Structure formats: structure tokens, C-alpha cells
Amino acid sequence: HEESRLIPETVDFAGVPGLSNELKQKMQARRPRSIADAQRMEGMTPAALAIIVAHVRHAESAQRLQKDVA
Image (tube, rainbow, N blue to C red; front, side, top):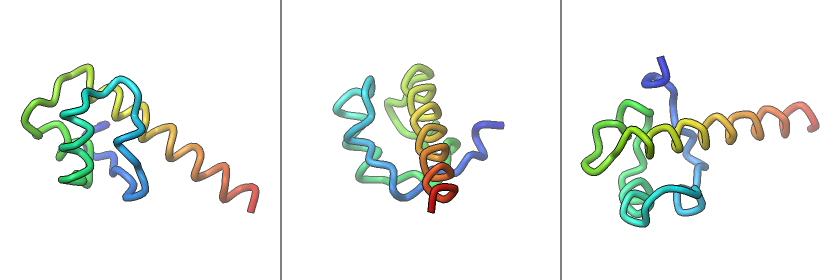
């Protein structure tokens, strides 16, 4: 069910630790809308996808926390 998770437009892939520079550049250039879109990108590995999912979850949590504080 992670495949349907949307990737917020605000995610800065250049700052995602653990991703190869090549994937960081591809993600920044193509801006996949969902995890499924990212999964289909050339060069994407299961490990890189897991890193992206974790980063997106973290970004979503931070966004919710900001809304709760505001």
C-alpha cells in the first residue's frame, strides 16, 4: 500500500541521506508524484525506495506537527 503514497512537492531529494547522487538528481529532475512513480524510475533499487518511503513519512509527520503547533 506504500505505492499509493503521494510524495509532497516540498521534499528536497538532494538532502535525502543514503540515496546515490544519481538518484538524487533523477528524483529532483523528474519529481515523481507517488512512490509507485518513483519505483518505476530507472536505477531505483529496493533499498533506495525504502529510504524514500522513510523520508516521505518523516516529511509528512513534520508537516502534521507544524500544523498542530500553528
